[in-house]
Image (cartoon, rainbow, N blue to C red; front, side):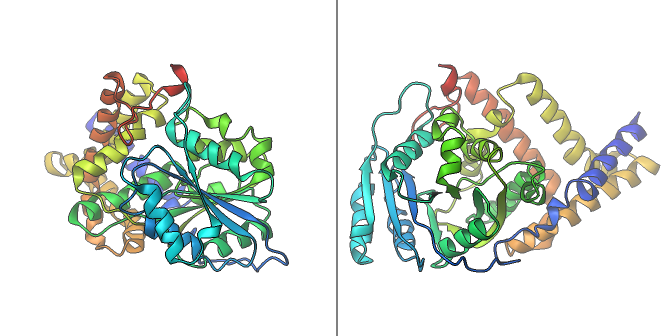
Length: 380
């Protein structure tokens, strides 16, 4: 029995490493295989949902207004009833950048029944943009952009005829807690949604921090209303848009998360906000996920510590595979490869975050974001 479990754990890692699109190599990046510039630059409108983002909004909006984009470009900030002066800080940033005429601040209306907060803000911004822009850039209020971000996004979308180009923004990774948990967050996301498969049409996923969307494809897919109740709105939107044409997802250094995480508890809250939604609020999928995480991450070190012979060797091989597979993502985040040895402990933490997500939903506090519980919005 122990040998069978050990071999099963090793088999899981052999499949993940060699038959999961080589997701762990982190090869899909926006600074590789750069497309040529289009002959004409289409009109783009950025839509930025924001709720109580005064601490970062000036840097975020300022970075958007400083884009060196050759075509028509404007920014719509949807202020989702902030109470901290978010709109004023954004307006001041636009004036400092000398681009106040390109920023529209839209005061959001209360979230209707059946909608999650972010999709409602996105929908208001998209509606206000009207039919003029060829593309909509949905980007979070805590993302800072390099001056050439939009130019590279549009070049890839136009040249490769993509209906969606999305970047996994580089998350803040400076404190010990961030170094422990943040690279793993992106590693696990890529494991669930191999970027190479997404880019070759075998899967559909996106990262909500940066999503450039072809407007006519969005309308044909049902608009933002089609994902109105989704907590994981980015991947839901990607699935919709994948029916309209090819999409692209990659890592980037051009878009950076501006807000640090306070510690393990704060990172846990970020993960727990959507983890149970990823499992479609199913207790059975939750149980299967917990068992799978134990088999994949916790069993190998347990075998090394408490087993002997072939089970121990299988555990060592599985732990080595997971540690090696984690190294490319650790390098991308410029952290020590020795963190790879901590992946069992990291896996245990994410298992708890997932269980905590379910507990929050069962208590009516699921999908908490900026003081609002949003899980199961579509079932209200």
